Length: 229
Image (cartoon, rainbow, N blue to C red; front, side, top):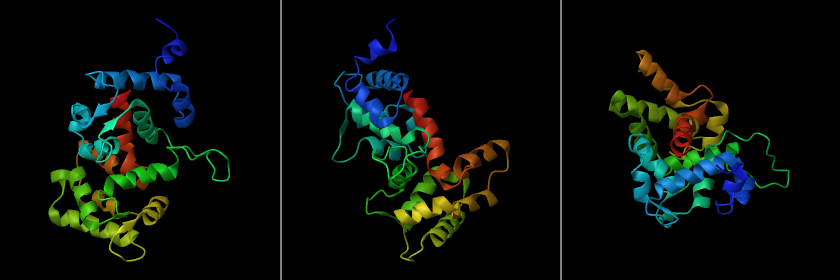
């Protein structure tokens, strides 16, 4: 078997991607191998149906939204560099980047990770999370574990706490402030569910231990990096 450096030569733009995304040689090689497996017809790009064939995404409650981060109207195919750039959002948060520096903001900065999470909710792309969008997302995540009345209570509390300008929706700035404060009506989930050990583990998935960012990203990050590498 060749060294990782020699194997890296077969990956187009590998060194530029490493510099841009922060992925290591091992990461890039792993992702390229996975990309080739998904690209079963050797077209050099992935389509919607390639992602839909991934079993772990098929059973993920927000799998369709995750897939939508890769392929969407206006971008029906995905080449390898774009594939890597999307996955870079799921690397551990970069806390060293500074706006005062000369380096561009990395995909895994706290702000860009939050914006990525925000986009999973903001399905119509209008820059706000409406009550309907929040309800739809939480319904997908919680399924039959809450009643409609409980779900609406959670949604109402989340909007009440986050909607600082009282326009009935959550903007990205409000979303960021909600994440920074750790205050969210989503945590009211814990008062009405999760009684068994298995349910308590699911609570950690939804509420997390590190505030709102974990609510949106922690499980999906782990799922995606497991799927693709």
